Length: 250
Image 1 (cartoon, rainbow, N blue to C red):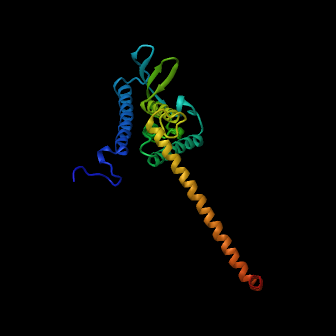
Image 2 (tube, one colour; image 1 turned 45 degrees about the vertical axis):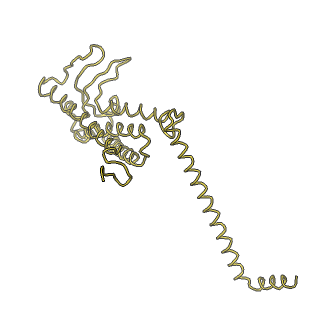
Image 3 (tube, rainbow, N blue to C red; image 1 turned 135 degrees about the vertical axis):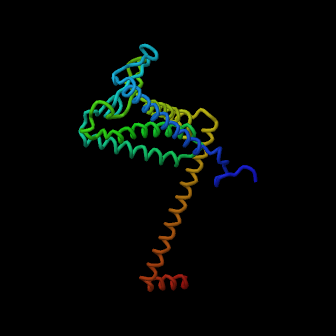
């Protein structure tokens, strides 16, 4: 029969969900491997957690920092309760975005890719927070005690020390904004024929749903009126007989 297709008629190796799952795993691997390398190199090889390696002087350097908070070390000094809220909230948010990914129409490519990058980045840092128990004050040793960051960027201003998970989140956010503005069925300014056609299809489906709902409401109202008439005739049979006699006399 040739190439085996799945239940939706797609050839398995052309399934976008399959490939995006591979991309997701690759992003997690890149994030974790770079963190492991940086941690091992600065702590075990150089034995200097404060060393710096200049890649492009004044622009990019490699160093090692451990962040027990969130972006830009925010909430690093927060209480145990607040840190638990952040960790649990991050986990729940990643689950919600992952669920959304599988619910979205596969033809909305850029939107789905953006979610893959955001969830991969969020999960990469979530793993570090679990490993080093950032909510527990007793684990705050200054070394190997938080999210592992290793890339300092100084472009227009100093972005601080980041990791690849942070880069993935930013890239996903940029793609999400682009999809919302230009490259999606629900885009404010859809710029491709593909998404204009998809948007029209969604509008037609929505109109069909509204028509079906209106028809259902109308049917229910008619049914209720019929039941009310039957109930009234049963409660007042003499009145009904009188009306019948009047029709006959007329």
